[in-house]
Each structure stands twice: as structure tokens, then as C-alpha cells.
Length: 141
Image 1 (tube, rainbow, N blue to C red):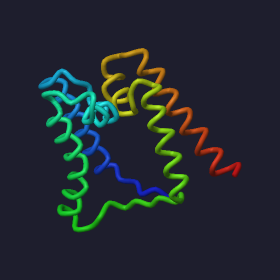
Image 2: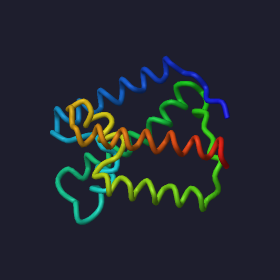
Image 3: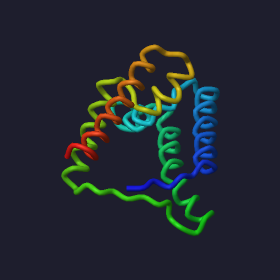
Image 4: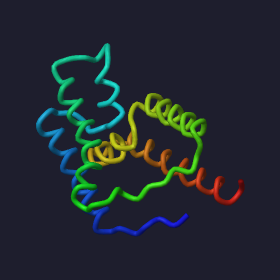
């Protein structure tokens, strides 16, 4: 499988994520960890910030619609696994986010920028797991 090389789009996207993380920290004192934001939209976490969390997730979803409107086509994407594989992967990612006390966005973007040692260990674990998984699935299976 060949991945399209998009340095300009990737740079702009990365800058937008960085700005969003800075704004969330500056305005609410919160880390922009997607799993933490998503899980706190539901009981028992409902509080005065629930609407802000909902808007953050709506913004993530709306960004793909904005991209489509701006460019005239959907972002290229393909998923090769079946429903059972995707469900298992989703459960593993969810478990990992809970067990690791955060997700790639919280640890990778916000944690590393705060020089958190725990986030450094988490990101090294994420990356090593991804590298090993790709190697196994593309070269051994």
C-alpha cells in the first residue's frame, strides 16, 4: 500500500492541531487529549464543561466536511480490515487509552510539549508497538 506524500497538508494540519491544543490549555487549562475529552462527555463526568467537550468532538467531525467543501472531494482513506478486526482494534485502542491514562494526542502533543517523562514513555511505547505491528503484518503474515 502506498501512502500519498502531502507535506503541505500535513504541516497545515499539524499547525491547526497545535493551535487547538494551545487554545484549549490557555482558555480552559485542559490537555487536548481526545480520549479524555470524549469519555468525559458521558456520566458520571457531566459538568459545566460538557458542552465544550461536545463542541470539540463536533469540530473534529466537521473538519472532514470542511475539507470536502474546500477541496471538492473526500480525503483519501481506505480500511482493509473487516468489521470484527475493526471492533477488536477499537477495543484494544480504548483499553490502551484507559490503561495508559491518555491517548496519542494527549501524550504525544500535549505531554511531550510539557516535557512529561510519563508521556515520553507512552509515546515511545505507542511508536514501538506501531512499528512492530506494521512489520509483523507486512512481512511475517
